[in-house]
Image: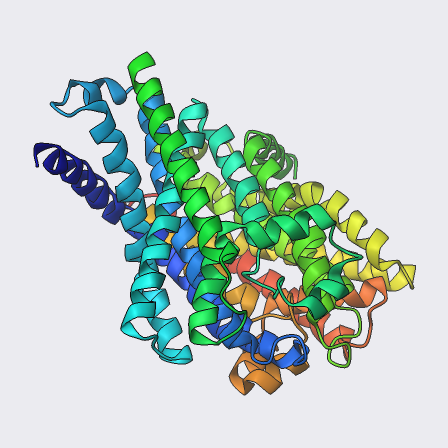
Length: 261
Length: 256
């Protein structure tokens, strides 16, 4: 119980910090809404209907995932700042165990992702229909795991360098790789589409897109709300593995770095 | 004139400080073209856009030019944060020379940075008519100077970094998506008349369409002259307005 309380304190601290980024959040919301209500609507007019029947409906779950990822990734920026400014000394002086601190931060990153993503998910439900209560729980559970894994990945990168510029550059490269090599924007599991892109996208990137946890999250929502693509074991597994690997490695790296600092 | 060039040179030098930002932007550019552009073009209906990859690549070039030219607004806030504004005011350079120099500097530095990318795009699209291209290229200078002037106008007009961040976040999201940078106007009109009509008066539309026209993708632009006039009006409005507002607002008041 005492451990739980400590973890909750750390989470509360990080959630309060999240509200500080209201300017960044407003910009991100504007971009997300413009992507959905302008870009996706216009793309619906020019995308081949034999590939995607309604691009707006296809893209909406993908956009939810991009919002979740971007918001959950923000925690790394703070951790990197703390490493650079040696705030970790203060953190270590708190009556909180190292593992409680690490767990709290990863979970807070996940919750922040969920908080930001909620209005986008609700918008998706409004346009695509609401899932059954069981499916809703599965979706929320999978998205929370994805957000926690993303926060873990972000923290792992943040503690690996003291340079803010290097952190930001790595983040950008990762963003583009994970966003563009995924099913967020295009139906990379559809055999007809795969046949079309086989000459423009290298096979390893296609495989990466299919096992990408962001693809898993977007396609799980699509399979529950749109019926396509069909739900496969690969989707939740990619999220589980991603979340497990990065949450654990982030916790280990975080504990090591704040002790070393 | 010498004083204006000194201001231009200073802004060019300042730009090189942002090397990581420049690397990030370059990564964004190549990811947009080699990943999104190539793959997304496979799902676009060729009856609507005959070669979407080429179309999109040209749009990405203009988006790069726009976002790089907008960056000068952040320089102004950095200077206000570090108290450099007072130093600039103490120099034997008039306010007018300062703002004209900054507007030109912002435009030139974005051109220097985006230039090689535009050449890469031309390599993808090809160059059908060099004369048209020279005209389009000159018009892009007007666009870049206009965007820099606009960014300066917003920055000194708002004078609050937080409000500027919010405003720019919303503004950037809308100005690019409500333009023909990513999709033709005919498609926008079929999606929403409002979107199509806004795009018709958007400087990003003028620049994108002129660049494509210059590179030989001519069928999206019925009147290059109108687009050119549109860009000239945009450039004049924001350079003149920029000078007026910058002169008026630089002294006094508080930078938040």
